[in-house]
Image (cartoon, rainbow over all chains, first blue to last red; front, side):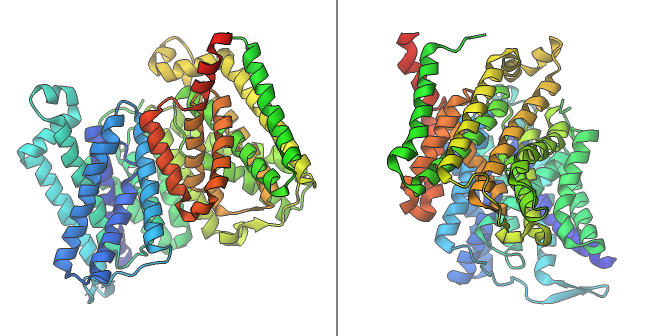
Length: 284
Length: 309
């Protein structure tokens, strides 16, 4: 029972990090970023390169991995997405092609075999008789911390207020003197950074290989739809819901069926409440 | 609606005649195989275009229907040992069923739900094929299908006939009142709804038609390869089809079909690039998005034939 509680919390935290970034860039810039999974994969590979290949200490390697992916995200938004923002379809196409290009690039550089990243924390921690790898615990703590910081940033700072303003009405925000395009860059950096951080944190205990981004991204879609497109509290709630349902299904039935959980959740949500749990706008 | 002009008709006949005669002139089994794949991709591209090109609801998981059709053919052949000809209608039925399952909850909504749901559904189906390997054959898939027609050349002609029929039916639909409605939905959904058009019905119906042809193409592909495997469901297949549609010119049906043939032939030429092939593909897509947002083939054809109309 406690096992479900802890492992569910770990996967929820990782899903939440992915989903919040995805929903943030959609809510603020209306960019449906199909390259989000690529950021996650890039984060994991950056961690692999910096720690396993270059043997840099962790406290340099991890932030550097996150920052470089955030920079990649900003450059993508600036040079590939922004010129095509007139059409939603073009944005979808360009982000999808970036994601494929990244996947192929990783495949060509590193090959398709699994890569190992050394654990950041080697010790096992025992909570109430349940052994849990220190790395998983670290992922959980870091995830909660990052989401908390993000919330404080958006609610308490001037820049956060500007982000909220743009998400409510970009044109009005622009009239008030908020530099919308710069806000998009900031949000893209945050979004890519959190996805990369999730990738860095899971890299020691999940398999690192070129296609690793696709399925987590599909989960992030599901979470965002269940939680309501553009709603951050909604995605956190939905991430908890999905993380725990998957863990429970894995324990009670079999881990084979976990992939279906997100699909069923999406179908039920769209049938009953298409705007999602905490969606602000009606979807139809 | 607009009548089919003599110019368009003669152009179509010339292209079909060229495609039909090409394998006879070149007389190589390898080339016939390449052309068969070209024509099957053309069926997929045309079917994608009918739904997504006309209504503007972009389908990022066409491989769901392709894979569903192909796996139906695979199961019929390897589990029930059915006559291979049964697999064509059954594949259509199964693909339509899949389109209803995904289309019903997502297409009544506005926003990106349909695109996300299709992408997710195809990715998850690919996963499920690997997880339930006892039934689906896992990584290797199902093999040992019987060819529909023994002679590769005759099979190619059969597939080409299916393509011609598919393009003719889809074009006729697109030129009809029905197609006009679909285009109107792309223009302004709310206005259509206000005008008393059952928008949801038309969107779902056009998705089922699109899925039916994709599933048919999937079954034809399965009986050409004589095996089916999970990559048929992959996002790469969907994106390849979308790139073909883009190159051909979105919304014109014949353009995407020709785009598919052109790009598949190009892929054969690029075979020496090996693993860089997909890179070349994605790069093509990016260039087209930036420089030719209306595509290449259909606009070119319109420009060339302008003065004869």
